[in-house]
Length: 136
Image (cartoon, rainbow, N blue to C red; front, side):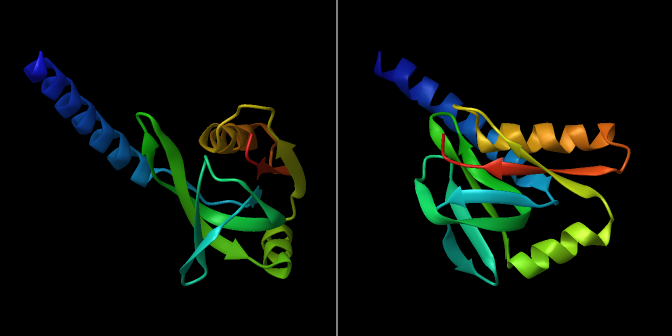
């Protein structure tokens, strides 16, 4: 019985590492707006987990990277924090109008970002979907 349990744990560990490798490749380069409580990790970067609580303000982020999660662990992300002025400048750069996309209850941040990334193809460069990520 013990060897079966060890085998399952080894298999889950291998799958978890494969999942993390795949996650490190995922990048959401556009803007998001989040109310998560963010942890400063230096160089203008912040991190948060999908299980974290809401902070006391909304923050614009860019260059989102998934750095962990899966297999019974909450998703973990990092991104570059922007001031409102920097976010406005990034928005005005390509001339598209912002479309703030608020997800429903029990939606994971990664899923919302992927949906918005996919939706960008449908707007013919007229609208820029911006995921609004919050703890749900």
